[in-house]
Length: 427
Image (cartoon, rainbow, N blue to C red; front, side, top):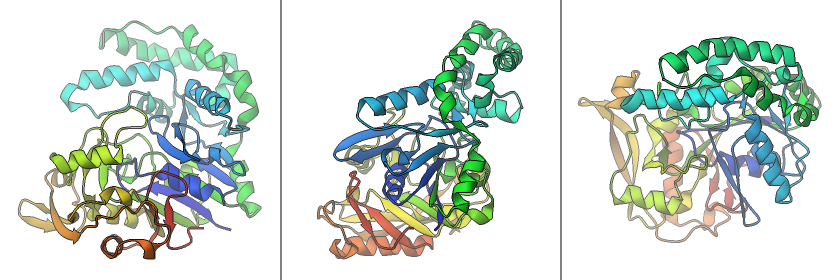
């Protein structure tokens, strides 16, 4: 039985939550391996809408066990709130299990995130202000707080005080903010210790044991390929590795244990925050995509930037993640256009680029080269087989498949769990 990694193939918000949730019916273990609560996964089950920020998407499948891996940074307040909300809505929440090695987001991380963005002004990155970046910075600087630390108060206090010795200098002398007291941070973390203790495990051992037992394990990252700190549109990226390879470090499994990598791509392109976006639309088509597609951030409510499908972008993601399959989401949103542009190359200073330019400078100046495909007017939200789609819609999917260089195995035609078309078996 396979292990599967699900990765966003663009800049996030592709509908990874829905795809993961659908696969979850056949998955024993759903593992979140990167990011924090700076991303939102929206699921619609039985007509009910659920927005998850930290919990793995498989949490809504009663037969799936969920795990928050060591590569995730955890805001314990958010985790407790999300679990409480699900319980209040009648969802049984006996997990997620949480890695003892996962790092914790504290209040000082959130404060630093917000004041730094304000300080940058026009040069801001466009973070959500959730403290994710500063928490990862502390992790790399070996000043982080881990889940296991909240069970040892002397160690916790020692680490918090050491971190604040440095951060308070920055807050007071550079940003003109008040000092943060170590006591308030320690207390805010200790209050979660008893409640979270039953969920904390050696996650790497737990996941590898499940694989040894032949269980189906699905690895789920937050954000997407082009927000990866190494392979994304740096510096307008997140602070972790949401690419498929990130599952190895973020969950604690070897690369030979990953069998399938599924890329999730929206039938058009969106982006939240700052950074280059070659196919971005500033006209009525862009606004139409935003309104029909409901393109507003699940975490922040910010309107998403919208543009046409960028095949150059997704082909790059497919190459680096070694996608075995693509799940194409929100195809139904494109109904009603007579012609649908698809970006097949870039032009930079008069030179055509059929692949991603090597430098960020070139990518920033890239102009899209479009191929215009015939659109369709029919409502496709009720289609359940590929053959039911209008001929021009089928041709659109097949052309994207050619441009990406990877087979499209599933299509989303609506927000509901049942509004999908399976072309090839994903597991």
